[in-house]
Length: 76
Image 1 (tube, one colour):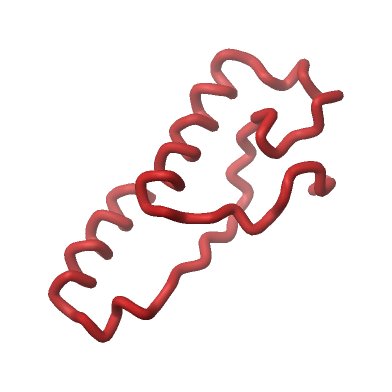
Image 2 (cartoon, one colour):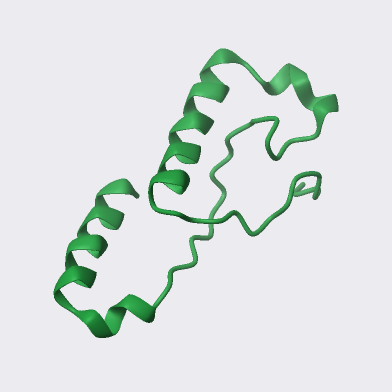
């Protein structure tokens, strides 16, 4: 995902018309984190899960992306 976003950034710099376009990323990233999982699922917040989720959170922050699904929405 990050490699794709890096390529997009280079392409957008070269093509001003694309600057107004956006991306929507959909998928089952299946990363457990208190930012979007219910607190009652704290047993899922293992060190490994939090580290994997942090990788996704960092990419979202680096590319100024917004999560469309708010915290607390059941996805099962």
